[in-house]
Image (cartoon, rainbow, N blue to C red; front, side, top):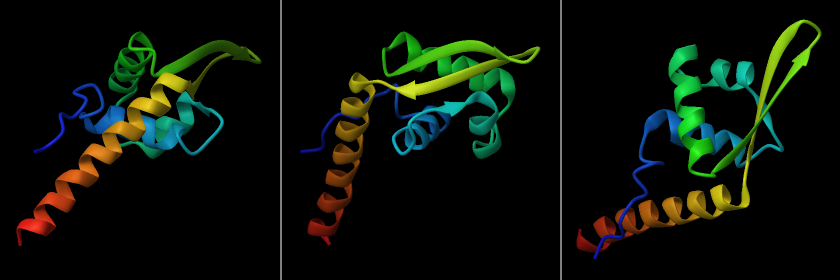
Length: 99
C-alpha cells in the first residue's frame, strides 16, 4: 500500500525550498531564488505557504538599506520532510518489488 504524500511538499518549488533548507542552517531569499527556477513572486508565495504550515521560520530584516528575508527549516518542517522522503522511497521500493 502506498503512503499518502504531503500535498504541501508535493509541489516542485516548495520541495526545492525544503530540500535546500534541510542542508543549511538558513538561506536568504536571494540564495533560494538563485537555486530554484521560479519567479520572485512565486518564491515569495511558496515561502508563505511553508511558513503558514509551520514548516519554516522566516525572518525579515535589513542589510544596509535593502530588505533581507532569511528562511530556516523548523522541527516540524524537518519531520514533514523526512516523512515525505520516506514515503517517496516506499513508492520506488514498491515498484522495484513488483518488477
